[in-house]
Image (cartoon, rainbow, N blue to C red; front, side, top):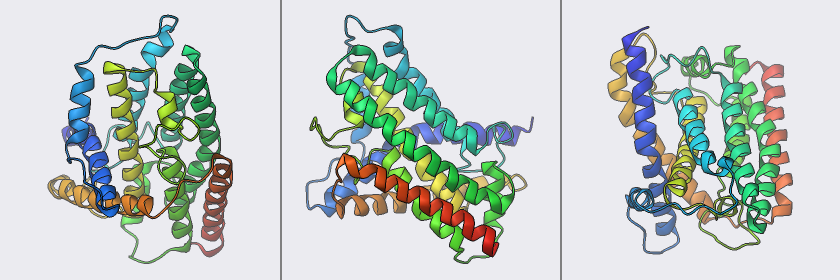
Length: 315
């Protein structure tokens, strides 16, 4: 196995684990600035994780081993998803074995386990959050698959690394199919990461929360892993969007020295993307839960339109 490829793979995993909480802190800081509030520290997510890892985990008396093991499974799925996405280089050992369909499968596996764990304890809010989470996933996963299929038509492959290399070598222009897919992907990523307008990550109102309702019974290291996994999921979706629609700056297999430039380019792109996410959240209002199916159905239709446009126009 190529040592450079192994080094690129390990570097991607380490960068994801370290930078994911920082991305969440940057988004929270930008949103506070836009709302004219006192912004939390950029390193606040790291302080939260440190505090939770040093606290004792309190588990319900009748909780099954599924409830205890779910945080580790969810965290492992998100870490593996970050390893699949070509964020710094396309020369990845996991690229031939894991494609876009496997990536969606990892997100689905994590969702199933966190939902089952929320139901396992038997609380009303946990069951409510699990039902809402599965509803969002049931509608978001087909839309995400259609977005990935739209971009896979360009490279004739479902491998993310092949997609990135193909799109990066195309001339800089606005392609209608990719434009529709990009809008659809933005809508799906907002829903999947429990962001406004689908969910508010800062709320604890019982009638509106989705993600927070799933994790009400967790504490200590279990809650730390869940929060870290949520940061990794936001990081993974951000990197998927950057890899598919802004792939420039990602090192390729025949350019190992480009890794030196890929990391600062990734930081700049994530900073711009995080600020854009904060601007979108600050200028939007949370919609009612009954409007979420319409929101995600629109994302699915946009992805299908992007697919058809690419077939018809060849762009």
